[in-house]
Structure formats: structure tokens, C-alpha cells
Image (cartoon, rainbow, N blue to C red; front, side, top):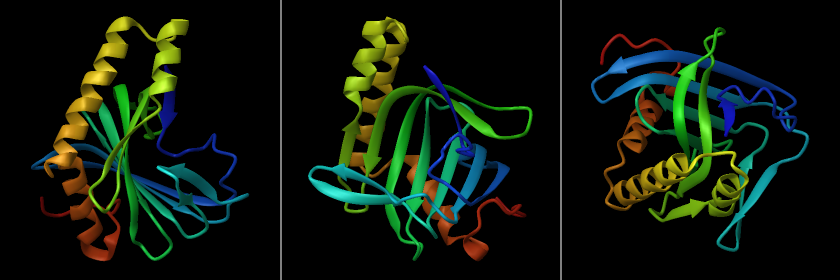
Length: 186
């Protein structure tokens, strides 16, 4: 299992970035919202999905991440330089928290779900999950929990009731479209 940080500090691809985080407690969401504004990159991050290349990180892109207190997943909304949603990326996690600097983290259970703006839902990295189980990096219980959580997320996304996507859309419509600024209402 790998601990991941919302700041993406270890990511050498990013030459220049701005990272913001804030605590959010409102009806429907309790946790942290982060905003990673990407400046310069060493090269664009392009990832294929079902035979189509998707540019996920480049100069001017923004990643908005919701890290709930009690869920076994996080949601990153990837936005292009025009502020249009590229995809919603769900990391399946064993747990979440915040480090001493106030940076949210999650213990990554390898399995991921991608939701595209057209509503299609895709499961990623089953091979990584299987390899982690086979090598003993994760337990049988963690393996089963990851698969169960991914199934629940995918079902909710296909039915249009995945609440973190609703939270992300709400934050993207908010004042100044900067969800890391403090809220006065909730």
C-alpha cells in the first residue's frame, strides 16, 4: 500500500504548481478540499483510456480533490486550461488523513475508477491490485475491501448518485470557482 499526498510533491512532472487546502464541514461533505493549480510541466501527462488519449496534466490545468473523512475513496476532478472537466478520478483507499503540515493523504489500494463527462465509468489498475495481493503488499481483507468499494462507487456513478461528483460540481459553481477559499454558508 502506498501513501499518497494531495500536494503531489513527489511528482517530478510538475515544475511549477500552487497548492491550496481547506477543511470543509457542510451538509453532505466533511473532509478536505484541495486545489492543485499546475504551472509548468516537464511534459504533458497523456494517458490512454479505451483507445483514446486523454491529456490529464499540462500547463494551466487544475486538479480539485475531495478527501472525505470517513470514505474509503477520494475524488479528483481534472480540469483543462479552460476549466472544463476532463474526468473524475476516484482513488480507492484503505483510509485518509492529514499530515502535520495540514496536507491530506490517502492510503492507496491501487484500484481506481474513472468517470468521464459523458457518464461512462471505467475500472483501472486491476492488475496492480492483483500484483499487490500476490506479493503480500496488501492483505486478502484489503484486496476484498478495495474490490467492494470500487463496485459501490461504480454502481453509484452509473446511477448518477455518486455524491462526491455532486460536491465537486457544487464547488466548481461556487463563488470565484475557488473551493479552497473559506465558506460562510453551508
